[in-house]
Image (cartoon, rainbow, N blue to C red; front, side, top):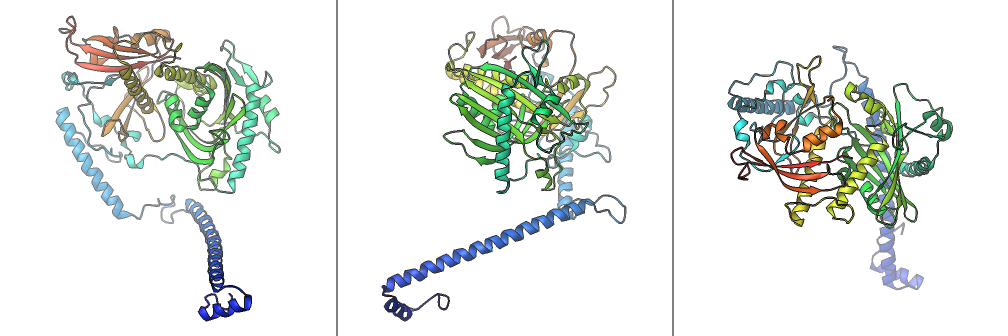
Length: 583
């Protein structure tokens, strides 16, 4: 074969006589041998190319790091951006932005009845396409279901776009910061990450069952517990670790438990499916995705291991979102007993890919789910993280965040309990529904609940303060005046309005108990006192769908009537879908 890998017919005949084999056998042997040699050469080539690729990647990272330290010899400033030399691209982008700005200026002048003041020099321009200033009459706390009513105050609502020139609003949407997704997992890292997830699972099980030596009960906290940091460090210190923690790093650790109306298998599916996870926790999880499915489960979700990315939010623009890249490990530890463990991967692995190592991370956290044999589950939740507050938190929310109440186990458990009640109500599970559904069929009930779920998710997503969702404080707020924040985002998602969506939010203290404010806002008889779209109109409930034992947990379809039509129950001028809930 070495001398002649392609023998002709005469050579094959001689070989067959010498070896006592048929000519076909000789022919097939040479074909198979050639195939084997080809595969062997390809493997060698692949190994060589892979080594070259790794070498080039290392050189690329080294060059990128060197570029960061380069100083311009002319001005002594930082290095130029990577896309600086793409001059033609910048010219085209600049011309497009100017064209859109002129279009918006014309629309604004038409609808506001005065010329649009150009933005001052040096202020970033707004990237606006097809801005509909008629606004469509969107009510506070609801979704408009039908028209006709917004016409009467179209001239009264004076939206001054000159004020929308702050840092977050002026940034072109194409230049918004991207999410810091984790670096891709290499084959060498997989066994290390699996070992890390196993250690986190063991620690989580111990933390859920640990006694008073680690956990401290909050006085009057209904069984809520916070972690004793010193006790934890002394018990769970890693070999060779000095347990050094920077002074600007804060530890939040809490534990809570509850019984929820959902089976362990369904709960596990919620935690391992990012879309269901976001749907169950719309007020906490603003974004979640699986970036790398490391290990597929056995007979379902058992022994599943994934790399996840999530953004956690508190329902106000005044509190920045928290971003985590972490491992999520699911294991069935006993019959009817499941555990979900989360832990951030080694912080240094991100630095190998040119990204700064994150200083906020998840320590072993998660939940233990025990089957109660009647369709219910007992969930014990542990939330444990190290946090670096990069942005200052306003005084209204500082205590709530730093005490752990904003992102602690108690909030997760309460939100899970509420979501399970709503889910069971949508399936019309006996014993869960409280109150009677009025004015809607069974099919209409499911449709209204699905639409309302979409509305709540959209509202919560619009309140987030992530790097991709910038808010700008309106000028003029000083002293005791209310601070108003404004955002502008492109509504390109399915089910969202086309074009630019403007939002405004504020936070105030009220000298009234929270349940009184909640009752005031959800009562249709008092809606005209605060909803500008229902001003001087009679508001009547068309249908009501309870979805929990608390009467405040319900979905209501409201109809606003003009004063002349109200006594006769006349034609509706506007329908508003409202969902109210409390945990």
